[in-house]
Image 1: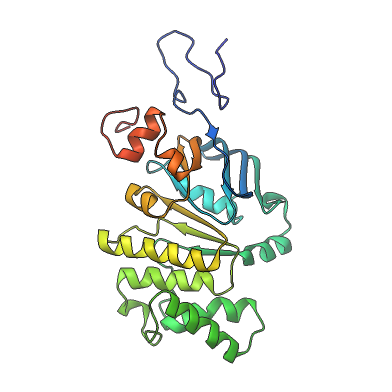
Image 2: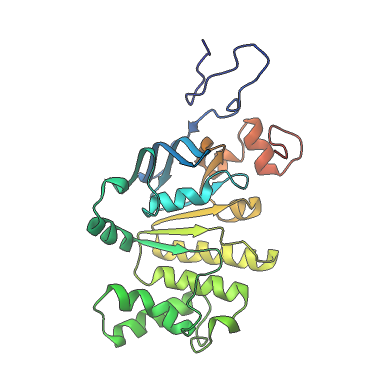
Length: 283
């Protein structure tokens, strides 16, 4: 019988085969805030590809949480579960005390209003001006007057450094400007939770650093639960207040960023330092 290790994964039986979850301690260090989002024993497969494999993860309120890990390990799948675009095959996803998979369509529609989402490319409508793109959620989901909408849109555009650019079309914007426009649009409904799916993708190091500073500044002003999916360690160091390291569909370790960067776990040490030697190879 295989021996159980912390985090629920069996160790090797001594037959030389090893254990693919050997470095998954499952350690979840206490955060300084209550949990806004919880994954409880979540499994998700696509055909034969078992992406999430008993994922247990807690993302705290009033913090910028980073979900980091190698490419293809299930990070973006997590975001889709949080907003109810995907449902777990097993397990549960809890957001502010409510089970997302258990909500009716009407309840899920209402729950999604508490989310703002920034996609990799900004996901702007090509036929609308920048200003109308940012105003779109307000026109779709509220009864606000055009005067109220204008006040909100102009304020959010100023926050992200796009004041005066509202007449431009998306194809006139640089990659960094599209990211900032998507960020502004994600904020107009005053969301309690903002999700960023690899916001640094496609940006050069300088614009990545500027976007990281912008995320920190806006979070400091607005609060809430921010969740950033990334594999960029510099972004995690710049922005992360809470870090969850995801590998092979499970949490290796998670907790306050300052504690994770001091972890003795060989995989966590390797990944957060970008070292070539360690448990993570080219497979």
